[in-house]
Length: 167
Image (tube, rainbow, N blue to C red):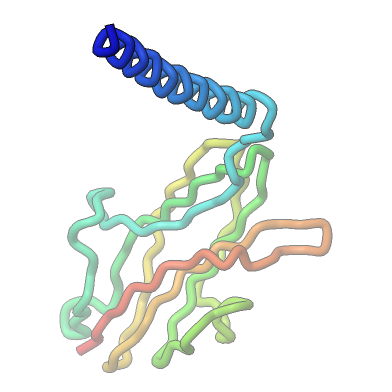
């Protein structure tokens, strides 16, 4: 009889653990569900700028320009608007011999090309940009993305750099 009591008592103890684990899982599931149902989880707004080669792929970027053949090259500048509102953008193309460690307010050289356009939310804009450089040397071609605000165009902190060698 004593053995039967010990077996029954052991089963009650196991049942107690199972109930405690199930209760803990229910509480955790309720907290997680409440977080996702009640929380504001709208995606963060952002915009991007990227470069594509003349075949609209990210493969064959120009890196050496021969002045004896041609002193220009072209790339597509690709901009995506994920800002949830209509945006007016401007792309500045700048050429520099030396790049600073960071570009907080845009590269402080005059642009060699600038163009503006507007995009609706989740739209993409591509534009072929041709750059001419005929002075031998190493250069960084910087494509900066700016957007229009109430106080004028502001640098978005998004830019692409293409390093070229002119020979």
